[in-house]
Image 1: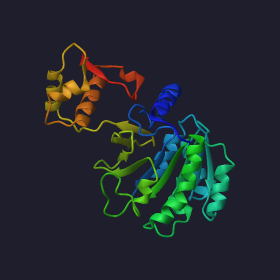
Image 2: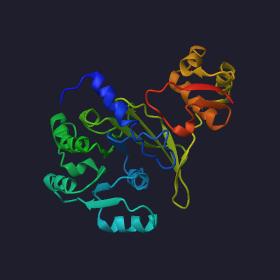
Image 3: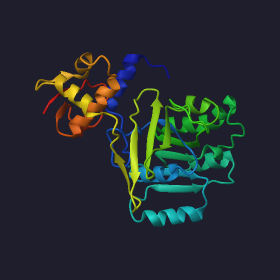
Length: 292
């Protein structure tokens, strides 16, 4: 269907802000938005399945989880998770053909679809652009028709990579989705880093930790030092300033870094934001900042 930009803007206004689903205990910085498609890549045994199960069971949508793991593993996982939201429907798909998997997806009233992993799609050559695209695109089309959210889980290449390039195989894995995320081990053994790239929505890197009881929690990344915090505080007054006015005084600091530090200072109570942080990330809004 053909639409002019003015019509698209009117549709966006009528629809309202895009729903942002929480990432563990963090919503404002979560990369997961309704109506988007994702590729989440990680090295084997990094914990991508355990992470995704904990993330999506807190979402207000019916989740269809297409899994390559057997029922016995899911039985133990369900027991370990204990009581809680029961929005997760698991399909044990190892051995199913692609048409059979597609039939399960078509017959289920899902709002979120997870394919764990893309090996289940029967892709014989991960470097073949045409094959990767042909196997993934029907699921993307189904997701767009429902305005749902789809997540493909994948593995990373041995050498890794930046800007989403760590995903193994053809660049078609990245080209077919809206957002590419990577899950990486970090220095602390119980922590993981989630980072990524997106067509439209900026992705903020997040670190989460798993405690001895198995709870997952987002932790702050110590990327900004006290000197930069002090410099930004010096730029601020008790009068409102927009972000670009603050950035103009810090020519050697990127806009992303300025925003990141401003958010950190706001969480510490040293800075106020308008609209407030409690309202979350708001598209198309010019933020204003001032000293508390």
